[in-house]
Length: 92
Image (cartoon, rainbow, N blue to C red; front, top):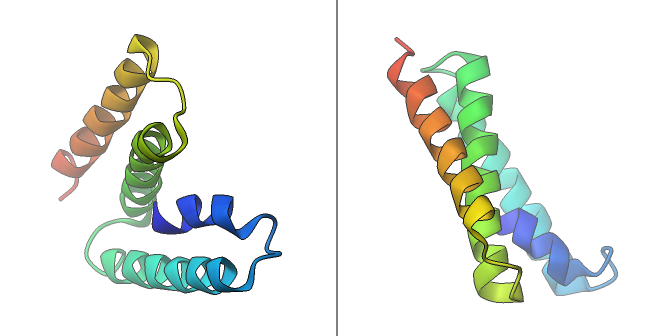
């Protein structure tokens, strides 16, 4: 989520400090994913990684950028969260 939000601040990677921050967050994020795949299957790890990122980015977009807060958006974010939990619960 940090790097996804950071993309907004880079303005197409024309702003140096937000760009550095965003690339750093990307590196940390991928590193943490690499640790997760040591323990859980790649499909589950990647789905959880992207799902958490997507859901939290929507929430932060609402908070930081006044993106619309609608019932359907809340419902869809909750579905992502339920899917993440379901995938994790069904993984050995």
